[in-house]
Amino acid sequence: MNRSLKLFLTRAGIVVAFISFLPAVIAADDLQSLKEENAELRQRFDKLSNELSQIKELLAKQGVTATIKPVTTQNVTAKSLDLQLYGMIKLDAAHDDSRVNNGNFARWVESESVLNNDRHFNLTANQTRLGVDISAPQIDGIRTSAKVEADFYGAGTGENKPELMLRHAYVQADWPDWKFTIIAGQTFDIISPLSPNTVNYSVGWWQGNVGYRRPQIRLVKTIGLDEGVDLKLEGGISRTITGRKYVFKESTDPDTGADAGFPTTAGRVSLSFPVWEKQQATIGVSGHYGQEEVHATNLLSSAEYATWSINVDVRLPITKWFLLQAEGFIGENFDSYLGGIGQGINLTLNKEIHTMGGWIAATVTPNSSWQFNVGAGVDNPNNSDLSAGTSTVNDPRTSNYFMFGNTFYTLTTNLQLALEVSYLRTTYKSFAPGDAWRQQLAVIYKF
Image (cartoon, rainbow, N blue to C red; front, side, top):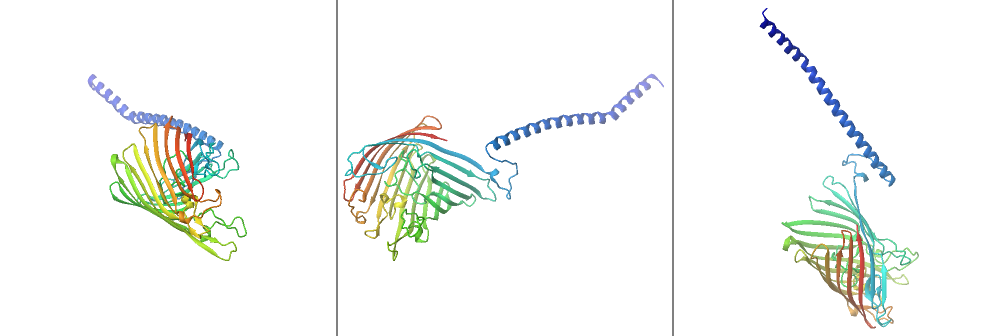
């Protein structure tokens, strides 16, 4: 065997041996890579487990028990809910050059026949507000949410001992594909949904702005007519609340609204459409009807009184920084909706008190720091439905006017200062009217 043949066979043997050994080398490399990847994944898992344990410890300190479960249609629990806390801390300082009712906020001016130009100064934090928004994942085409909100204008025993007053407490179910909504609980009335942006807590109530909050069941259907043009239909029932009680045997007897035996019905039709600078304008017409039952003192007879209204609301953005809003109303026995200057029925004449009024306001927002508001309103009951009183305590109010101007200045994302100057005039059936200039400063911290 010559030298060349030996060299060829030697090289061929080396190649064969290398080829035979190659799978083992590759397998060893793969195994080492898998080991390294496994070690890395183990480190990540240990880190994640440690972080999860820390989260559980923090939640346990807050009294919350947490478990990790996938969200399914059969398993929607509190762990799936999104809770958003919000609210504000508000301090109001107000000076009135005549006596207003009730001082912390202005409803109407007492007759000057009592004490002429009787000055008052009030300082309160009762409008401080706390709320929570709750939402759940959309399941089977249904999106559910809820809201609970309260402030401190409850009937506290002292100015420095305010009590919570429930504002909102409702659940809402939306069918986005159908543009249909059901609301059940306490929230704003269907009628007259707008309010002027005032520093005064009462936002023009008893002065031309009507509508409040009460327990209700509401159905809402939105119909798209064109691009950006929507027709909204709202209807529902609510508790008839009058604040008038005629006690039979127990102090817990219901008021005259519940005594009627059926709820108040309300409805609203509104049209929204785009205007300048892609802003959305809305025009709405709304109304309500209900009854209350008043028993005679001897309980041998009773009388029924209707409560009803027809209302119009307009929201019109003129430009991106200029907004115009207005509402008008007409109705009877309207006191529980904060109309009629707090007067609903006249038991002397045995009739409902008819009233009409409205308000208009403009908002200018030149930048993110400043906002300016001006507006006016009137609530004007029918004088023929009112009986003259024997003193200023029971003399009925025949009209109530207000004008206001204010500015809100945003110092930071959370902190605002507000200043408002307003003029109020209230006239009476028999006694002298009351006039008051009110200056109000507010410090507001929102979160």
